[in-house]
Image (tube, rainbow, N blue to C red; front, top):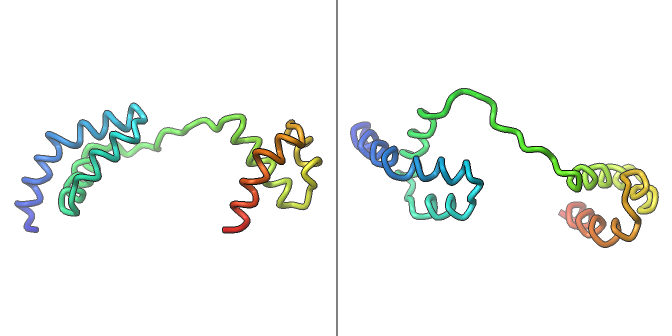
Length: 114
């Protein structure tokens, strides 16, 4: 692809896909992002990346707050991986052992099997 062709394709992406993609990302609409990107071939994806890179300010990405459940899961996994029993780990993170067995242990088995 010549630089002129890339410029033309980038201009098309800037006028059509890029604004819709930015809107979808700001609204956390994963399905729309998938729809917008799945129909693009390699050259159009590259042209879109060029457009987005040119539009993007050099700032840190926004941080998402960790949910209380995610924090407990992370702490629980650490406790279990350092040798704590199910009961000990559950008490340390503030959940009942039954909840740990039902919700956290299957995840622990899944990640340790990988």
